[in-house]
Image 1 (cartoon, rainbow, N blue to C red):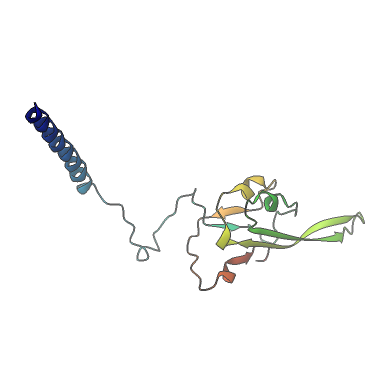
Image 2: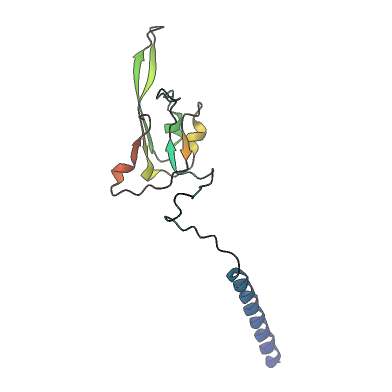
Length: 148
């Protein structure tokens, strides 16, 4: 009786080995999709959903759409966004008005969760597909977005 279970175990082992070899052989003959970076830098296209770094688009006059509400700073789970707001008087109405003085973004501690982009009511910030961020010091990863 032990001889019968030995043969069944042996055949089961050979069957699982052949299954593994079949998977390996199939993957061996599939075409490869390796990108030859940096040689193909000119033709490399990133997907639109890729989150590379946070940007603040500006119009032709250098103005951005940020109203300094602070919702992106509040929505950021690890504090990578720091907004500095200044209060100025509006010349037309004479009332105090909030204005964005500095918008700092720390790329080195960003989780790329996109909660800040989703929280922005005026679509003032968005993620770009730029992915080359190699620097020698972490201080160069802190970027001021409201300056062109």
